[in-house]
Length: 276
Image 1 (cartoon, rainbow, N blue to C red):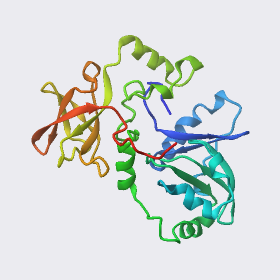
Image 2: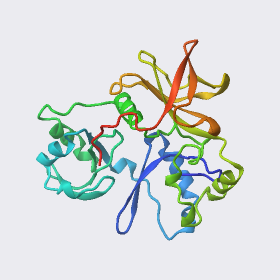
Image 3: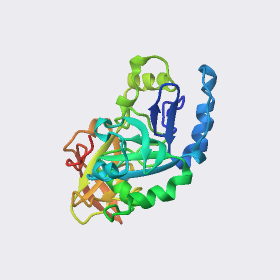
C-alpha cells in the first residue's frame, strides 16, 4: 500500500474473490490503512468496509501443516497453490477461508472465520499434541530467515519498493497507481540506497537499531536482526548506498560499542523451507 511519495503505508495480502477483495493488513495499522484507502474509493465503483471485528484468524504453519489440517477438513488441500485460497468447512465450522499463505517460509494455512468459533478451532487444532503455540518472536526469526520484509522494520513510510528490493510488487507498466510518479522520478534520478541482507559471525546478535557503517561512514541502522536459530549465526538487514549493495561486500555493525563485520549475502538465509 503506497502513498503519493511512493513509500509504504503498509504491507498487506489481497484475496481476490469473484465480487470483492479482502485486504489483510497489519492489525496495528488497520485504522491508518482504512483512512488512507478511503481517500481512493471515489475513483472506483466500490464500497469499503472494515470487517476486522467480524473475522478471526488462526495461522497453522510448519512442514506438517497440511497433514494436521487434513484431519479436520474435507477441503482438497492439494488443490490450493501457494498464495491461493478457497472456502470450506473446518472442524464443523462452515464458510472458512482456507488460504495457503504464511509468513514463516514453511508450508502453512491461514484460516479466516467467524470469531465465535475461534476458541473451539484453536483447541481442535492443538488437541493431538503436535501443534505448539508460537508468538511473534518466533514468527519474526522465521520470516527474517526467509528474507521476508516486515513493516516497521525493513519497510516503512520513508522507503520505496525500489529501495527495498520489492520492485516486483509495483508493475510500472500496468498503468496509473498511487505513488507511480514518485517511483518513476526515483528511477530516473537514481536509487540512492538498497536494502541488503547480511550475516555476522557466530555469537553475535545484530539487533534492530544498531548503527551500520560502510567504509567507516555511518549509513543507517540494522532494520531487522537476530541470532538465527536455523542458520546458527547473526543475520539481519540494512540499507546501504546502492553502489555498495553487491553480494560479498562487507559492512560494520556497532554491537554494544564494538564494530562487527557483516557480509552481504543473498536471501533467503535459510534455504530449506517447505513453502510452495
